[in-house]
Image 1: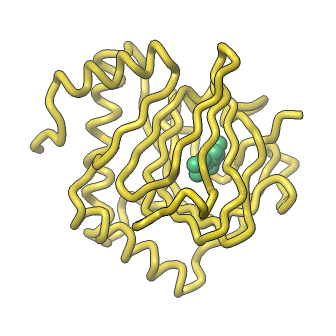
Image 2 (image 1 turned 60 degrees about the horizontal axis):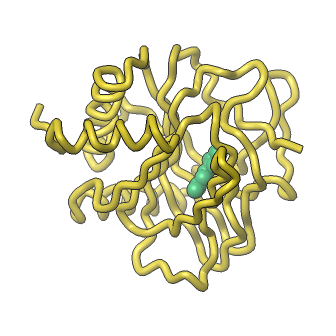
Image 3 (image 1 turned 180 degrees about the vertical axis):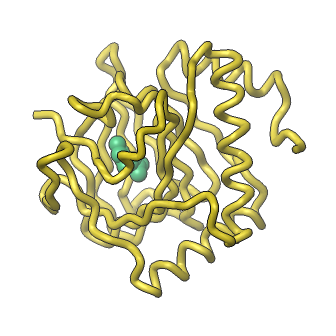
Length: 216
Ligand code: OGA
Ligand code: NI
């Protein structure tokens, strides 16, 4: 398999991730691949395959629109849709490079399509929580063409030194951050907001239906 990016690129990004706990990469995939992903996503939205995302732990899972308002569909790597295959090739390359340069023991990943309808958000939270700590790196790929700042829907990262970072969910932008360290929030969106969101896992335990609990 050909590499998407050079070793130098990966070393720079992994350094940034280690140092700042997050990294933002624009144009992570060619435009036609992004369009393919979005068309696959659009089809599933039309077929009403997405479900309201839940919060909570293994035994207490519930939908709470005052905490998170997105609807999701977990992706199965083995489905025949060639439009999402390139994304998984990229995920493999990311996993390999994080293992190589970050000395992580990542053994798997999980991803879902996420759609935030107009008027939704996801309150400040951590992607790791009690009973579910195998998520090491959070990864989000945004699929919103012509996103404008006035639409809102920013990803807000609460950095450890008290600073905050605000990231617009623009087409082809990928954000990676440490799941156990960075609290974050999705701001109210005034426009339909689409992404592929997922996690690099320490152990694939098949508990992908569990969602992060909010921090209080
Ligand atoms: C999440 C999440 C951020 C985003 O799904 O846990 O925080 O920008 N998503 O969509
Ligand atoms: Ni999150």
